[in-house]
Length: 128
Image (tube, rainbow, N blue to C red; front, side, top):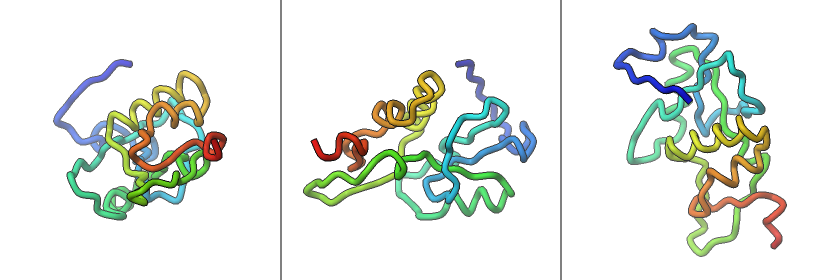
């Protein structure tokens, strides 16, 4: 992957209809990666989780939104803290998207990128 950093905003670099803002609060499920789209990862980096904040930001900017298909391929695993989170670090999202792009398999990508500490396991391994 080729990466470039710039102080410019993604809003200034790409057409609005090409941008997909990834947020765990979106009602739209990312089903496939479109090479003609630009995916915003970690558009907001914050130590605390503010529900709906990234979704509100994307809507204010009139951007398409999507969430990773965690709920579609994973289930909440029983754990002593009863902790379950779909909010991931930027590197986890990048790893998931990279793995999906290479394998075209959401289960494989999610298994590679969603750590067990998030409280989710793949559906087919939930009963094992």
